Structure formats: structure tokens, C-alpha cells
Figure (cartoon, rainbow over the protein chains, first blue to last red):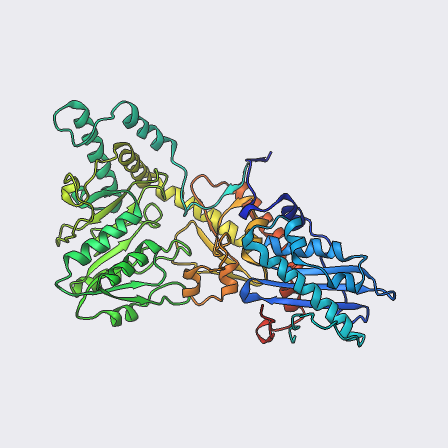
Amino acid sequence: MNTRDEASPPVGYSDKVIDHFENPRNAGSFDRQDEHVGTGMVGAPAYGDVMKLQIRVNREGMIEDARFKTYGCGAAIACCSVLTEWVKGKTLDQAAAFRNTQLAEELKLPPVKMHCSLLAEDALRAAIADYRKKHGMSPPSGQEHTVQPAA
Amino acid sequence: MKLPIYLDYSATTPVDPRVAQKMLTYLTEQFGNPASRSHAYGWAAERAVEEARGHVAALLNADPREIIWTSGATEGNNLALKGAAHFYRTKGKHIVTVKTEHKAVLDTVRELQRQGFEATYLDPAQNGFIDLEKFRAALRPDTILASVMMVNNEIGVIQPIAEIGELCRSKGIIFHCDAVQAAGKMEIDLQKLKVDLMTVTAHKLYGPKGIGALYIRRKPRVRIEPQIHGGGHERGLRSGTLATHQIAGMGEAFRIARLEMASDNERIRALRDRLWNGIRDIEELYLNGDMERRVPHNLNVSFNFVEGEALIMAIKDVAVSSGSACTSASLEPSYVLRALGRSDQLAHSSIRFTLGKYTTREEIDYTIGLVRREIGRLRELSPLWEMYQEGIDLNTVQWATP
């Protein structure tokens, strides 16, 4: 019989972060080559975070599904999990308007973990840019996006 | 089985109930000040202190007169290094130590550098050992002091203290050894080892926190300058009212260790090996530090392609130490593992399991299952693992930098 002492979550994570870390939504991969799929990969192993976020876009230009894989801390994993849920049903333009503060608020991220939400935003932008590039659409001007790794 | 399972005995240990019982006596009944020479309360306390001194000396095969009490290992290391450097400063100004020493040694040597001493920090080999020839080459005519730990706190490897001691003695260099992680885990014989100063502490071997001891050799005589001045306690080397209950506890812990460590360590080694055998076939797993010349209770491994903090979160049902400074904003991986040449990534994803005399087979089996399951889960989530599986060499990838 296992007993458990009352343990506080590490680094002051909210229950929502713990939930998405332990039960991540939409974890996995789509075929990178699929023409309906846009892939964004951001971060670097040396910095402790790498996020891969993928969107599947239907003929109407709506994101119908999303997947992610994350190498990173609990907050990084939770950010991607929440973002893949949010992005479903959004148009590309709606998705491109996403701001990281939404994640930070929803997950009650501690200040030292703000960068995780920023990186997740970058990953989504990179995925949108990849999809647009595949379909010959240039990204709306004034929108910075992170360069894809050359792998 | 109680969760989380405690596998962090190198951080600290629970106090043995026999030790706690002994301590209680000196809190509530025999509460006298050992420095009170004029009444029975003082005499009883002094007897307890001297009895404890005898037990600590016995575990190290030293003379009780060579043991002085400190508040713990940090003070012991400070007193040994500053005390010896200050006393022998007219002989020379050079100090030799190793990059994988505990911060209590490294930061103290840094402070001595600030005071005008010079220092050499040796790199260990990839398996954690210091090379005797490198050590010899680092010695200078003006080297007065060397400090090498007996057992590394992170990777548990045992340094060649006997050989280093011979070398230092032949050159008239004072040799300090931090034996905090060695006492109670392996035999220490100061009649054989040519160690001049040795630091030990109580709370790594089932004694209380806040009490330690410094061994100061009498033959040949080693001198140090005191760092705390006051009532002249401990032959003037460390003033301050002796904490009788702490000292009695440390004495009892060392007495028990001397009697029981051989059988305890044999059992602990079998459990440690069981843990290692239960996880060693996990792909892309790296053992940190040599496995042969290592204390019996330590296992330190890195899991490639999973991030350190996530790993600690995922295996929160076991209380272990990580090479990742996960609570700090700046990701600073273990300097010990970096000194061994491990990449930042592998240093971050390292876990130190340290077992103790209360560890059970059931706990080890639970840990094996948990680690296997969670490593598998985190790798399924890891884009790096996916790339590795696809045969992509991650070192050739041009990573987008933030």
C-alpha cells in the first residue's frame, strides 16, 4: 500500500501545468512532407528547450488538428500541450495573432518560465510560416518568425 | 512503502533512532556545559564529549587528541584550508586542488586566492579520477597545501588518497582530505594514510546536522591558525561552547558505523547493483564516474534526449538529486559532470541515486519500474529522441537560436 505525503509541486507550478505535463494533449507527429501540414521547430538542446509544433490545415484554411513534441521542462511541455488544444479550429490568421501572454496567464507560469511560453509562440509562428511557404503564400509583413533548423 | 522513496542519502541521512535517543539525554537531563569544571553537570557533559571524540577517532583509526569539533563540513574545510594556509604562509603561497571538489573547498580556495595565495585546479580524467602524474606536475617549490576529497559527492568515485598522501609528505606539503562522503562508506585508516587534515561530518552517516569534526595530525605535527576566537575551547583551535547533544549524537553515529558499516554496505551495494542492472539496458544511458572504484551506495547516470527538470518532475515519487539546477533561471548544469567532459545536455539530464541503510528491495524495484516508464514517456515526447531514431546526428543540426 502506497502512501503519499503532501508534496508541493516543483518550482511553484500550477495544477494545470502538472496536469498537462502528466497528461499531455496532442503529443506526437504528423508527416512533415504532407502538404496539409506545417511544421515549426524552435529552440536548441544547449538552451534546454526544443519544441516541434505541427498544424494540419484543411482546404478552408482552418487548422483542424495539431501535434507537438517537446524537449524541455514541465512548463515547456505544458505550454505546447495547451497551445495545440487552443489552435484547433482557428484560421491561420487567427493563429498568427496568438500571444504568449495567453499561455502565461492560463498556466500561471512563474516568471522564470516565461521564456517557455515565448518559445511556444515562436513554434506556432514557425509552423504557420512553413505551411504558407509550402503553399506559396508569403507571410504577412511585419511578422517575425524563427528560422527552421536545417535538419 | 512510503512515497516519495528517499534515494538521496548523500545529501543527508535520517538520524538513527539510537542516535536520537542518545542526543535526548544531553538535552533534557545531562544539559551541563562541558566547560564547567566546577560541578557534576559539567563533568558529565565533558565525559560525553570525550567519549564521542573517542568514537569519531576510532572510525578513522586516529588518536582522540587529533579530533576537534566543528559545526559541520563547511566549517571543517574552511578551518583546515584557511588555518593551514595562514599558518604556513611564510613557507609558500601555492595551493593545489581539483575542479570536482565540493564548493566548501573550491570557494575557500578562491577566498585564499583573494587574500594573495595562488591556486591550481586540476582537471580529473573522464572517469572522475585525478591523475597522479598531473598532480605531481602541478606541485611547485612554493606549494604549501593540497586538498583532494576522498569520495566525490556527485559520482562517488574514490580518489587515490594513499598515493597523493605519500607524494605530499615526501615534499613537505600539508595534505587536506574532505572525507565527508567516505566516512562510514569505506575503511579509513589514518595510521596508514598520510593525510594531515581530514574533514568529516555527522549527518551523512545517520547523525545530526550541524556537527562535524576536523582531524589534525599530531605525528608529524600539523599546525593551523584558528579562524574563530573566543573562550579557547578545543585547545584554542575552535572556540565556542560545545554542543554536547550534537557531539554525543555524532559520537554515537560513528560508533554504530564502525560496528555495522561492513554488513550495511554489503547489503546496500547489492541493492545499488540491482538498481543499475535494472536500468542499464536503457538506450542512450550514460554512467557518470568509474563503477569499480566507487562507494557502494552511489549510482549516477545521464539519460540522453530528456531534459533534467522534466525528468525530476516525472520521477517525483523518488527523492533524488539532479545535475540540473532546475529551480534557477540560468540553466547551470553540474560543474562536476562538466569537469568530466560531459556535454551540457548530458550534465542536465543526470540523476544521482544514493542509497542508505533503510533502503529496501521493494523501493529499488519500484524505482526501476518508474524510471523505465518515465524515460520512455518523456522520450516519446522528445523531438530530439525522434530525430535520433531517424538517424539524424544532432550535432550537425543548425539550431535556431532565440
